[in-house]
Every structure is written in structure tokens, then in C-alpha cells.
Image (cartoon, rainbow, N blue to C red; front, side, top):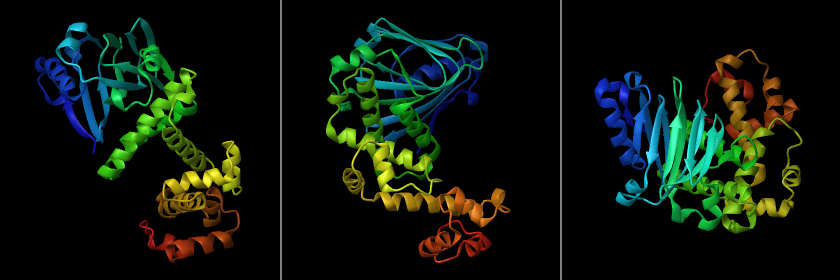
Length: 325
């Protein structure tokens, strides 16, 4: 569950800066923070637990933040933090690496090393997500990770895009996640982070087989979701798109307790059910909805839909039911 740790809108203006420093020191790591426009200071932080991983969503007016060697000596939880900029401009310097970040950029930094960061400098400031996890959980050697701390990582393509989609998806669906779901997804975010870092270090072979397979599963799942409209989407085409054998593809999905065919069918039917009861699609012909989700033959769609729900598409739409029964 995503819970609000602090929202300065509910505090007197004079107390907001101190409250932010205290809240981030407890929820994240201790820093020395100065708001650049203290008279218009606004800041909010929300957080959710993903097992030993924490995901935070933050918004703040322009500020500068420092983690000094003295603060590290006083308290160091030995965490990696992966930041995703959602809006605004930010910059950070760690280990003599300086990066300027805009929306879609990712950046890793280390709580055990000093850094200086700035958000802004203009209103309204910046919004960001922060993934925080113990350093020991990242399955990469420190000598591989250290040169990447403070360096901007592209979140617009490849594994970076997938990681960004997972992080924003977690914030959007947090209310529907069980504790077991959250823990598994926390492990997935670490696997994706390791794969992204190994890619940037050109050391993909350092990622253990288990995390590589989990990342591949997430990539394939994202590919399937993006191609549900294609009637030719089959295990064979999915395997070919990822340069693996169909047998290996089936093995990956079996390890996750499902099959490729079931995944495609369930996601298509979920999309169809949602559109059939959506008031915005009330006048859209059922055949057009079926086509949109990869069913070009109305008779095939009706048969598959009735098998899954016990109702024809027209009966389902008339009932206005979205629970799948």
C-alpha cells in the first residue's frame, strides 16, 4: 500500500523544511537539504514496501540536497537508490560523475558515498520515484556498479523502459497488491536494475541465470501486452521476436505457473471485458472490440468469450458486468 509519509501542505510554512528533513531521514537516508524558494516550499513523499525494497513517490519545489562524509559516518544503511525523474529537471554529482536528468531518466546512487543533488531551479520543482534496497541484494560486484553511480541511465528504451514501466505501474496498482505480490515485484525491480546496470557496464554475463530469466519473462510479457491486437500473436512468433526457441519460451512461463497461450488469451479477454462495459465504448460494435484485441473472426471471439465467462459478448455488455462471471 502506498502511504503518505509527509505532505507539507498540512503544515505551517515555518515548519515545512524541518519536517521534510526529518521525514526523508527516517524514510530514506539522512541528507542536508535547503529549499531554494523557502517561502513557497511544498513537498510530499509517499512510500510502499516491496519486501526489503521500498518504492517512494516524491514531489518537491526547488531544493538542493547533500549527503556528506560526516552524515555517512553518523548513519549509513548501505543502500542503493535508483531515481526515476517523472517531471522537472534534476542534477546529481557522486564519485566525480555529474549528471543532469529530465523526465524518463534513471540514475543510481549509493548511500555509502557522498553526493550533491539539485532539483529545479524553477517552480514547480520536480517529481520523482525512488527505488531503495540493500546493496547486498544487487547480484553484481561492487566494482561493476561503482563506476555507474551518478551516471544517467536511459529509461526510454530496452530494459530501462521496462524498468520505468514497472515502477510507474507499481504506483498505479498498489492498492490491488497483496504482500506476497509486493515482495515478488520488489525482487523483479532488483533483477531489472541489475540487468540495466550490467548492460551499461557491458557485463551482461555477470547477471546470474535466475535474474536473467525473470527479466526475460518481464520483457516477453510486455511484448505480448503490446501485440495483443495482432491475430498472428502465437508462442512461435513471441519466441522468434526474442531469439529463443519455443521450447525455452514454454519453460520460462511454466516456471511462473502459466503458459504463453493462457497469458495471451487471458489478457485479450481482460481487454475485451473492460471495453464491453466501458460507457465510452457503448456504441462501438462488438466485432470492432474483438478485432482490437486480436479476434478477427466474430464467431471465434463469441466461442472463446462464452467459454471464459459463460455469456455471449452481447449478453455481457447488456448485463453491464465487469467481474468476469
